[in-house]
Length: 113
Image (cartoon, rainbow, N blue to C red; front, side, top):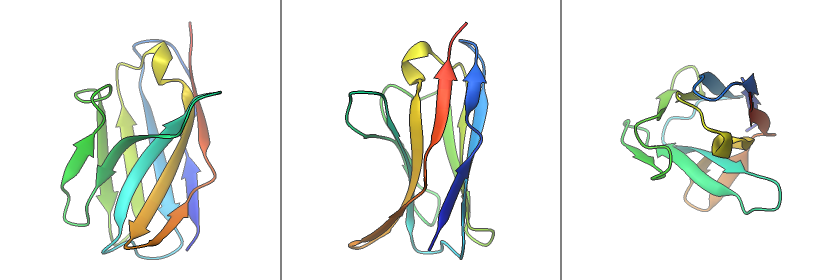
């Protein structure tokens, strides 16, 4: 399975971006997640969504970010609103089923005025 992430870019504080992750096949049954990693820091979970749509968010993004998925299209999206400078990072999508996981290549998000 290959994951292709897109949608990153430069946005001003308070702005919005939508990240999209497209899998080469169906993602039904796989846990879908977005992680982020800022320079010099560890990769942290941002949000995840089960195959039936249950979601979980990091406390720092709750209420601002929304994760969604389309099992047929094989996409996992992350809508990011009210972006803050501390949200700047490289964002990675991930799918996992039991001990098997795949990562996308990362997409850069810069939040700056």
